[in-house]
Amino acid sequence: MNLLECFQISINEVEDNLENETLTISGIAKKVGLSSFYFQRLFLIYASITIGEYIRNRRLSMAGQQLHNNPDLSIIDTALRYGYETQESFSKAFKRFHGCTPLEAKKGHKLNYYPRLEINVEIKGGKTMDYKIEQEKEFEIVMLTKKFTNDTSMDEIPLFWDEYMKKGYDKVVPPMLGICLEGYNNDTCAAFEYGIGSIKECVKRVPSGFKTMKVPATLWAKFYAHGPCTKTVQGLWKEVYKKWLPNSGYEVIKGFDFECYSEGDMDDPNYEVGIWLPVRKIK
Image 1 (tube, rainbow, N blue to C red):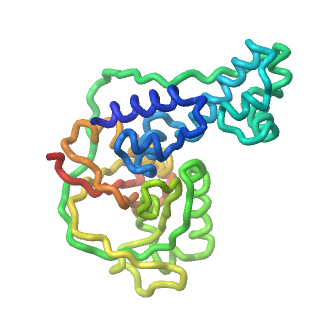
Image 2 (tube, rainbow, N blue to C red):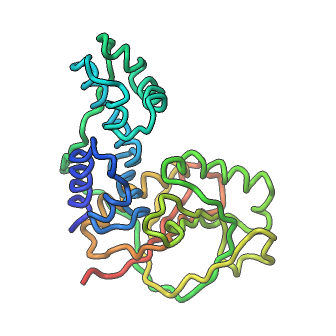
Image 3 (spheres, one colour):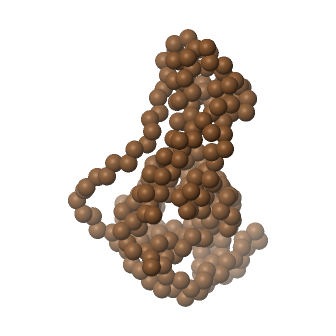
């Protein structure tokens, strides 16, 4: 099953179970044969929205339509149907999404509609990617780690980087790497551990609170791009997973991957960023 097929099946699973309280992200991931962490990453890259947000938006959109079209429907029954345990929590989420209360929706207040995701295949001009496949020996890294969830990581990880720099850790452990450790090796876990650090041979001492990790010898797919850091690395992730990986003949070895950062001004248009993915040939 290729990545686009996984994505389409996951959308179908959500749409078929919007009113099913047993719908879970880990259950969807299992259906497409991926770990919860890896599935959530792929969904975010392909859809530019987390799977949790997508399910929430679709449910609130459908709930609004039903209350608008059927004013006699019970609000609490509608809340339970779409996965909310109390009328209060449903009403708060409903108002954030629609800008009105469920009661106002019954009376004809205008509502927001969030459509089902559809896959559109575009044919565009070719674009080269700067990458290489290399075998690396075992090496060791030093990092400061923190736990994040998929839903909030895009906002919170930059704050973690700010904290790292403000505390002067960059003077002791150069921030060469952003290390993503998959879901604590737990396929049902929605959280993951993220580290900032360096290859150990570049570190004179390991500060208190930092940890070391041996990275086993493996084959790496290494990708590079140039431009202002945040925008460039986010774009590179999309290029890798949407364009290179589905047609590469390789699959990702799940567990960890690296973002690589060079010295210099991260806002410079010539700043270089990299992504290293452990891979193996598809048999």
